[in-house]
Every structure is written in C-alpha cells, then in structure tokens.
Length: 72
Image (cartoon, rainbow, N blue to C red; front, side):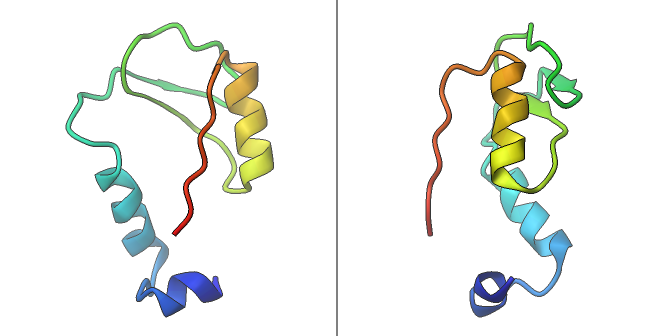
C-alpha cells in the first residue's frame, strides 16, 4: 500500500517480519484455522485473510473477547 511504501517497506516479507516482531517473546502455543474455536491459553495465531473486517470476524467467531486496533 501507499503507506507501507512511504514507511520504507518494499516487500510483503519486510511487512511480515515486522508483524512477527510485534508478537513479543512469548512462545507460540497454538495455530488455528479461520473461525476455529480457540482453546489454548497464551500467544496463539489464527490464519485469516488480510482484510481487517473479515479477519476480526474470524477471531470473534473463534471466541476472541477483545479486539484492539493500533494505528501508525
């Protein structure tokens, strides 16, 4: 996107590495499919589309109780 390019990101790989870094240092506990019920505690990952409204729909369907969006 325009904002990614302006921010210096040139590839989806660079963007993905930034997303991984935001996960912190907690061990990954589980990986879920889209809208699959979340049963593990701790840091988990759900495979969702990149479009935020649909992604959040899958998280909520899986049992997510809090969604926080940050900007910038």
